[in-house]
Image (tube, rainbow, N blue to C red; front, side, top):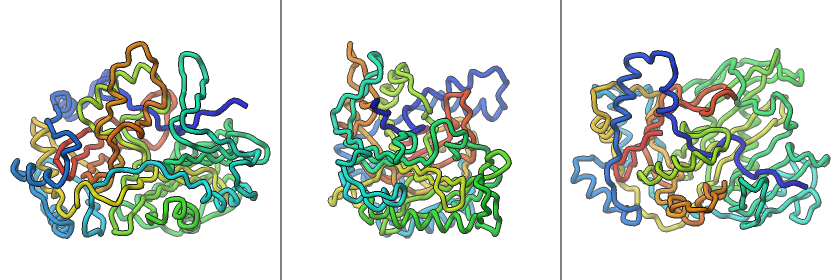
Length: 456
């Protein structure tokens, strides 16, 4: 049996964005042109090597005029800015968790907990889980999965693929030792396989304060199902199945509910955010603005240059659950679980204030342009800061998808950032005729330890 690609269904590789998208024939609005010129002239400041980024970051940054404070004071500063913000960096809402500290940690990317899969396998397939089951394929780290001579793929993480009774791989459950997991109940040629990418009938932006109402929709199986009941069902699934798979480290909060058009009927797409036991928020973006759904080896040259400019490589943290029938899950997608060690790199007792994060953007983006964001959020990001294996010269060796993993060689951290997100950062419908799935230059990250700005 030919091995399928054990990779994310849509999140693979960063792409060159601004230069390509601004080459369209249409005349760009004046404010867009001004912002593009500013971005073109933007250069990253020099920062210390990640090995030296510790509690000393605060002292060195403060010497450069940046302000650091406790999370309690950061929340007070954010509340004040929501009332009175005369800067050129505007936003509709601020989100900061309820934690007292927000430490930075080295990531421990591997947790081979296949023995925890019994319940979720039984839920979907009504059978026992075993690595020895004829319905289970086990791919070990280092295994060569070659699909073509010019595009080799070496498996970089231990992972399993569990098949349904009919052995249709498109309806399988994939689980990596990194915590990445994907499940679908629909065939590969089903037009409603990726419900999250279909047109939206109605959207509830829970992260902006929207409340679910009493609306009920006719699902594609003919059933009537209310949005509230669907949200409760999905929440129970996360608490029952994801929580034990992620060591009981997180709670899961609904942040976004989208009613999707499935012809004359409807489906639901729900997004959840991890929150740790201290109340700190984790990145929950559905995909990053620098990514594309396909793979083109020519783009690797750009990625190397991007990483060499000290921009963090962002690991996917999305949790998405979709339905096309009542209490019948169409698919779920769960990004890498951000496990970390016990000893922090930085205590997180004091972090960059929102006021200083605004100053960083305003001072480094010359020209006086006003930047309008939907949200400003203090969140944990799962990042690679130093990627020597990935930035080494290629020579005559062909790179594979496995090189994108970088978990074995890069400096992987769980790190707090101020994330400024524009309202149209994440497109609602996937258009297969274009490469990018998100709007470029619309996610601004300010490192809450160093004050370094990165734009995606």
